[in-house]
Length: 133
Image (cartoon, rainbow, N blue to C red):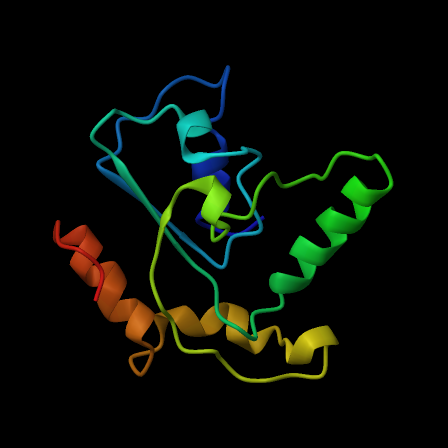
C-alpha cells in the first residue's frame, strides 16, 4: 500500500475520525473507500489526488475493474483520481516511461518527490494552505 494511502485508509468508516486539515493522495491505488465522504474527515478538510501517467499504480485500476467485471469486489475502492471519488486533482509530470502495460514504470511511482516534478510544488502549496499550482 502506498505511503499516503495507508494512513488515509485508516480513516474509513468504522475506523474513527482523523483530525486532518487536508489529505494528499499521490500515486494511490485507492483508500478502500468509494468517495471522499467515506473518509470521515472534518467538514472543512480537503482531499487532493494526483497520479502520474506512467506510474505503475495505474495498472492496479485495471485489475480492480477486471475484478468488478467478474462480479468480485475490488480491493482498493474508487481510484482517488477518478472524478466520482470527489478529490481535487492536480497535475504531475508523467514520470519515466517503462516496459509495463501502458508504458508504466516503477520509477514513475517514486518521482513525485523529485525537484523537477510540478507535483512537489503543488504539495508544498497544499501544505501551506494554498490551492495546488
